[in-house]
Length: 346
Image (tube, rainbow, N blue to C red):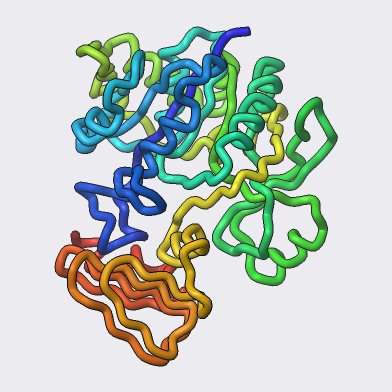
């Protein structure tokens, strides 16, 4: 059976983890959870496993040098340089157009944390089996709390190794999230997918024909430079950007999901990073990276790249000092960090 082709998407401006994450060095390329960056973890997760082909990375030119450096000597890796940021559907379509029609592609964000790599690979194999049957497959992340920051997938009829998707649900309010968790029918939409390349392109052609046409034109007019592929700029720039969920997954009659319980986090804000680092917490739930003195504090996440953080009597607060900037936010407020002027105008 042919190997699964990992496709790693590198996009975004890094605002939600400001001030540590910046446009020049956003979240995927930072060592947040371990000594490895999230991007390096994404590459290593399937490295050395003959069931997986070398990775294809899709990214903008701004971060090409960083990606090349962090890829290291990964044999057979390819880098597709997007001429413009057009959201996930065109990026994934580029990768599909560069693969054989029967290739199964495993689409992964570059900035997620997955604690259990073996569980990830098992879910990938189950998803690939469905993709070979022309299902368009999402990973349904096991929900362990009523999270309002994620979209949800509602399970439908059982399939071999997974389920048809009955409903895609946007980010719910707290009451709905609690009802979803209690029902046991819903999983988080983790933004990880498996497709047969030819089937995906056919679905994009059905629902976004102009996008499909322009992607194929950009690939046909593109150029290869070593391990890098540069799609033609003009047709790609003309694409109306869209996410893969809106462009395809919420329209297709072939949407499926595989359940995945693998210690997943999108590290979408400072509170999410603190949750991923919970193993480092002291008896009061405080997590410290760098120099910090905490007195009578609980649930405080303190991270500094130099100056000492001193705090007294705080609860459920994140304090981040990085690159001469200081951020203080409650855990609940961490979702809004990307809207701060410092994050927007970095």
